[in-house]
Image (cartoon, rainbow, N blue to C red; front, side):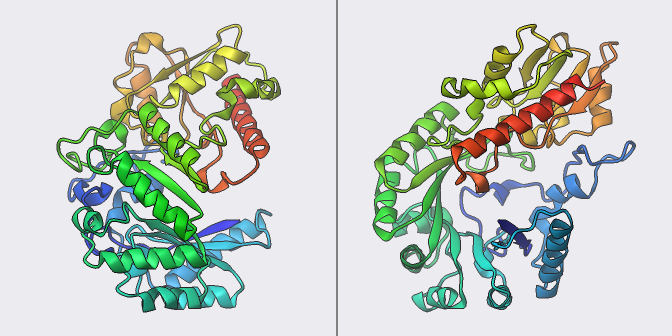
Length: 415
């Protein structure tokens, strides 16, 4: 079991400067948007959850005491709910770079004295100036690291990450790979991080003993998820279509002896996302509840074909239709996305993604603007298992999906 310990941190400030491809490089500095979500009160647009998303880029590092108290509170809640087990790893995370957290060594020492495993969340390695610092982290007891490598070519890191000591960063990455579990990541920027570049970096990572690699598809437009940005992160670059990106992930996964998966969610070995949509898993569809109500499911452009495939297989009476907005990630759907929908395709019951950044009352008002009375409901927060659980057996991942889809169907069938 992995539990987050969030330390705060301001992107671009607490990370050694912005990388050229950083999501936060072009976020709103003023006049931040107000989104709304399922947690907002009936008359209140904006709550601690959805407005917290807007405020994250401005969150300074927390004190050591704040981090410990918040972690203790979260663990207490999990224990009361019966969700706490004996094998706990604490993931120390930051919205900047965790190696820049001023109390990091103290925090690691406290957690290790309590016999917890320690996972260092995102770091670019720019906070490591020499091998002694990396050795010190290992000696303090770090068990796992998530490391944004981009490339093992120092000149690439210098140019695209603003890394002032790229050789030291790469040396630290090698040292981590040789001694603990390392989950590396590469942002795939068309025309910059080419397949040849990735092959060279993967060869180095394989030689050093990396545990896994995530290839992250570069996002550069609002429909790809830039909900806090006024302009592209890098002008003139068009990310590859998702299908082409998945082909790249699959190629690298076959080429090397460590697991390679993608973000947005794509795991070629586990059939993620939406394993239930695959023909070899059709037997699991028998575990889904029958559908006896009409409804329209609103989803993202990437999820739409998968959901359509599943519901066409289980919904012989055509109770449900699936419509998508241009936004590629369902949890990043905003009111602006909904306003592009053709209401002639929307039935009297509408299901929004559980995490969509839309106030229910505002959505309901929009879906009634053509004079029809429609009920707006929410689906579950997750329809397939989240990334930290992808190491589970595929059987368990499929069981998770069955539970999520039954929850979705139960909402459709509700009075």
